Length: 370
Image (cartoon, rainbow, N blue to C red; front, top):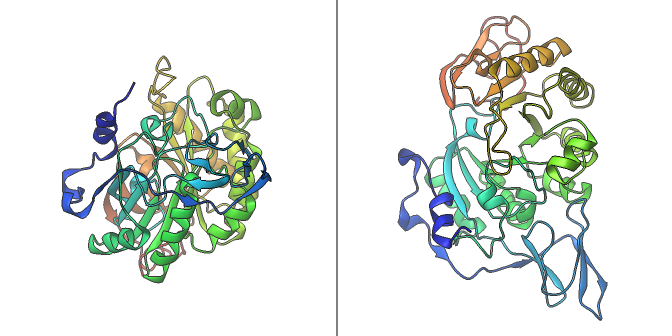
């Protein structure tokens, strides 16, 4: 059982050079929940509500929380517990999100509140994703203050990440509105498990999203994530139709989603439904959470996946969690010239000019510096 002190240690680790000064943040206890946007009362007499934020549609009695642990029925109204109460606040390179085709070498002010609407057995941030905001050490960070800190720390974007940002939807939305008015990009890394109506509302203020496409079968999602595949696919299509820049991450787990057919199916679906310019990150699995007996992904498997993606017609296929690998670089889709060279989260060389290849002039898909 993790103690509150354990959560403090977990949530606020960051590289020394990027660590926020202690005086910039204030520990917050208790929480200050905000009424949720997407829910309805289904039994006023008994005080029962139904959450309409994600496909689960949790029916929540008074005093109880939904599946995500982050939304609670308080006296017959549904509240977001993590509003303005992040348990993780870091300044990261945007490459860590990962976004490889969005403002390379820029800093991203990254926040998360506890909770998740999936139960992935391989979760890498399970200490906070599989917890409630009532259990974590949180900061007091209202949207206006969050945006101000991002500006003060010269962050080009704000990232809603680490846990599932859908669970702190209202906080993300309110912050995104302010950040956008200040010229700061809004980006998120999400599992894509959200209903169409709130997603469309968010898309008005969202610049980029990296969606975890964890596998490509209903059985994979059911057994390993306690979820369904189809809503994730619909989210990706909605993001693209709304003009949000999309990147996809596929964590490859040996013996579960690493066979050639599944990798081919993922690549073909992305190509046909999202577009050739959508980057896909094939990330290396390491033993974690409830899957500690599984071996790390062989690098050769990531290379096979990247090769399948390129042969399918996808223009940008990357290998993740293998610093220094050639699959981390960005190549011009026309002349194949390397235009961005990386090692891990570090950009070693950047030659794009206004988002175009310096060799052939081809416009490269992404959000680039002018």
